[in-house]
Amino acid sequence: MQDSVPGTDLWHSDSVLREGEFDAEDVARYRRVLDRMALPYKVDNRLRAERADLAPMGMSAAGGLVSTVRDLAKLDAALDANAILLQETIDKAWNPVKLGEFVSPMGLGWFVQNHRGQRVVWHFGNIGNAYSSLLLKLPDQKITFILLANSDGLSATFQLPEGNVTKSLFAALFLRLVT
Image (cartoon, rainbow, N blue to C red; front, side, top):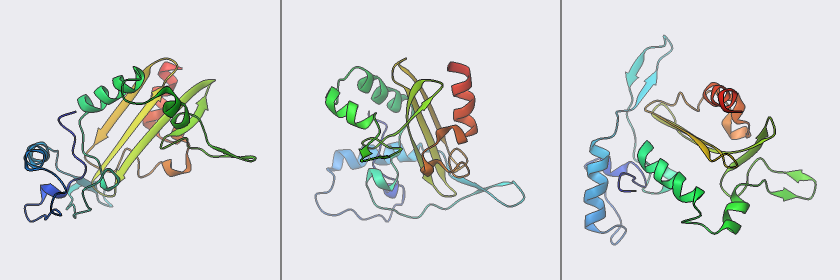
């Protein structure tokens, strides 16, 4: 995964990293990836797109992993092949956590739900007025749907943190086509 970066901060020329945080070769590669990144847009109240400014958020996956569909497809293939995680870890990630009678909509880092008898695991990303993403897997069929956008339109309006991916028009259409 050579086109993925743990955040957008290096896009700002004045960003300062903590000493020893990343080696110089990685920083140079991160900057090259970010130089190719699509500019972020937000939609105004008249439904017009306008360029959005992106403030520094810290260099971590929690601060907005930057990636490409190709890199995410490589990650997906490695997950399906059990090449990077033990099956025990995948089982924890792709099955809901149960606490007594409470069943969480999440496994270990992934949302988990059933749709028409199919297990669906998914994750989304959202940087308000800038970027969004949706990665949806049907692991039993080895089918994955990856969407990336340079606006928050893939996730901001669909209440995805509640744990129901079918509220997304994009996910609902995909699921209708494959299940």
